[in-house]
Length: 179
Image 1 (spheres, rainbow, N blue to C red):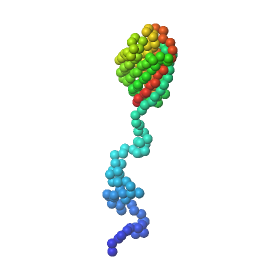
Image 2: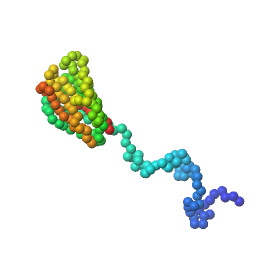
Image 3: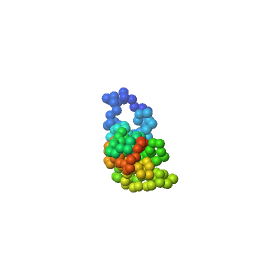
Image 4: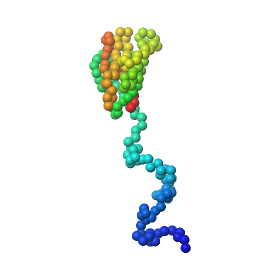
């Protein structure tokens, strides 16, 4: 008579050990049966706890920060709170009460360029600079405010404020940092 099923009572010690189980068991016969052999084989290349690897994975990093500065002053200031070491940024700056604007891109390797409004010289005129001051706001025909990135840090950047002539007012910036 052929056996149709095996019960623990038919085993001498009441258990099924590795020695008693053959290789090549179909994965759908394990647990709830909803994992295929292919999916089970993917575990062969996992190097450590799967959840730890998922939790440690990170996607693209970015952070948007805004702020302001007194255009008439010079010196260094820090923009922090990024939460990671930024590698690139985009920056838009304006001077309060005017249509003076600046758009800039920068990389932590020192590559920078800035597109700045020169409307005080001619209507709808823009200038372009490379590897120099990231912000160049024309306050009047002879007054300028500049910002230059002097250091990239683990949580933001340091910038130096300089002026030419006697600019006054408040400058505002919006910076998107990328990791």
